[in-house]
Length: 122
Image 1 (tube, one colour):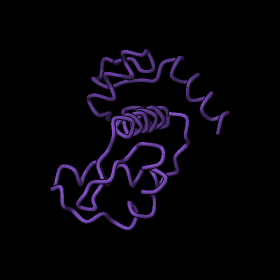
Image 2 (cartoon, rainbow, N blue to C red; image 1 turned 90 degrees about the vertical axis):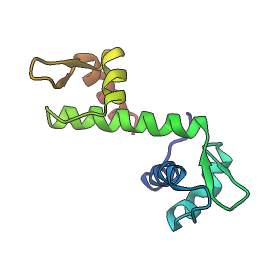
Image 3 (cartoon, rainbow, N blue to C red; image 1 turned 120 degrees about the vertical axis):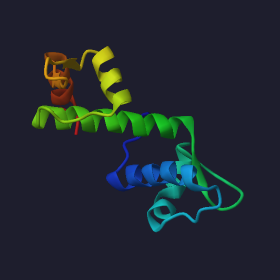
């Protein structure tokens, strides 16, 4: 995942992921259409014959990584933030968060280092 995506492009990926659950012939939103050319070019979306779009494995991975980063940032700024089950399991397995006695999570030093590195690279 070498290409940096804008918030609008992540929003388009998220909308496509939600559309896939509704029905295949759903009409794409303006956000999806605006970002489709780039997202298809970097192989995060594939166009369907009916004019809609589907996520590729790379697109699903990009959404998951975005959810992990957002969750880690949220937990760092506001302890006690609820994380999705799959995101919490991944971050805990990688050592970025640790479970607390209050059935929540806290960011570990490794997680803080990761957030610092991301802030430097922006």
